[in-house]
Length: 166
Ligand SMILES: Cc1cc2nc3c(=O)[nH]c(=O)nc-3n(C[C@H](O)[C@H](O)[C@H](O)COP(=O)(O)O)c2cc1C
Image (cartoon, rainbow, N blue to C red; front, side):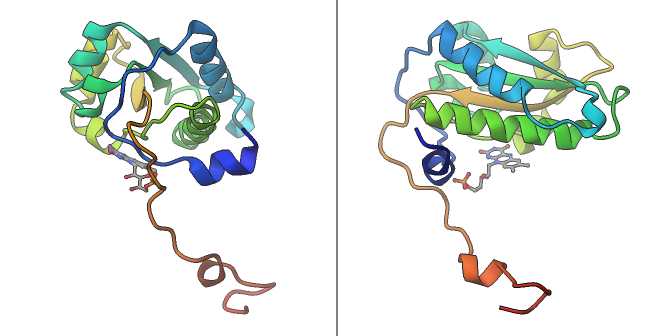
């Protein structure tokens, strides 16, 4: 899929039809995360690829989406390794969301609901206490075409040369 199609087609999907997510696809998705920009190139991130049903079912305690997901990726950050760990995790998440879309799957950025149950999710995934489990991305097939949430029109958010000039 062309990059601009992936950007336009990416949408938050929170319930999935079963998908056969191959090892090659999972590696390609995580590779897209690994290649994201990183402040001072500190690369404070690690990624957990999840494909076991029992782990996905347990993650449903964080958000129901995982119950129907066929795979997932967790982004782990070391806050002691970079002051930009959150920005880095965000850049990696977006790269992976675009890769997931380009490969024909669907996902959603799970961070808000994870924040409330991070300790539980870290225990489940064996993440060391000193690291953060920042974002989880479930992976599945969209059961039906899902449009991206409405965005403000381009001409409303885009200025020319100076703030306020159109
Ligand atoms: C920082 C951040 C945290 C988010 N946390 C969650 C979350 O915990 N659960 C969820 O279902 N969606 C979450 N989302 C997805 C947003 O709700 C979604 O991107 C937004 O509604 C716009 O929809 P779209 O992704 O289809 O454009 C999060 C998105 C971002 C950027």
